[in-house]
Image (tube, rainbow, N blue to C red; front, side, top):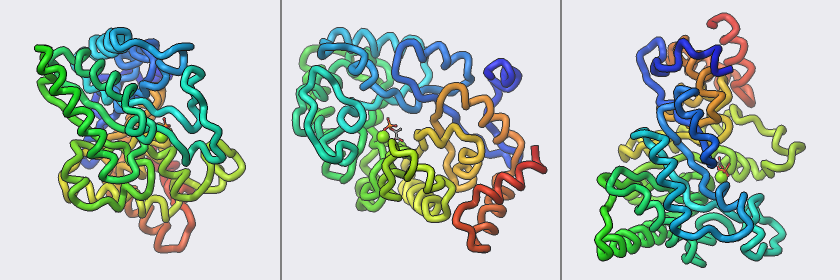
Length: 324
Ligand code: PEP
Ligand code: MG
């Protein structure tokens, strides 16, 4: 698939109306990194650090982690990598951390909740990331932040880690961005101060959609019932994008839907300017974006909404047939 799009690999995802959408890739293993070159992605919009924990049978040591993150940054060769701190719990259970018996693990003790309640691993991870950055730029984001205070508490851990590094005489990042993943509807309604405090927002559409519709992402039967291009969900996404625009907060979308061409097009039409996806999706999404005027996509969406459709999918797909 990547060969098919080789001719546009080094070209930007600029639409016919002149809007450039930054296309990034999702990764989690060292083996994913060669795709950065091959796919034409501008960077790694989501590096799922838990994958490295999941493939081991014991807790990695800080030095191992820092060597690993350093390899990631070296392979990225100056391209931006947004490291997401450990997102365990829910569907990702570590054999060496006692699994909790929870009736609803997806809504349970997971991700930043674990990181804040048992900060040992989070601290180790932050330290390893700072070491790996070795005086260069670093972008870190926290998963499953449900409220402003959780973001502040996680950021305070980063401040402590920085102070420790400084005391030890290690180089600090030349530029440090600290972001939050927006994957619970509550965070979309956080006070303005949250949007001002956070350096960037990454919309975790897989979880956000699951909690928006109260439909388990692991349960095919209910998952398929709710379209990502459902009018209510798009309205919600647009509100998030607008809040970020108002506060000047960079926002991207990194759920699986970003890699689906029709979805990517609609997201761009809603105002999103950064999408992170599976490497193999970068080519097809770019190909499509380069062929459209976003105002036209938007007009098709608005018309479908005005006509009372539940989802804009049909209208946008039908329209696309005559465009590309
Ligand atoms: C998401 O929820 O959309 C996301 C990117 O995180 P994960 O799929 O790893 O939960
Ligand atoms: Mg998620």
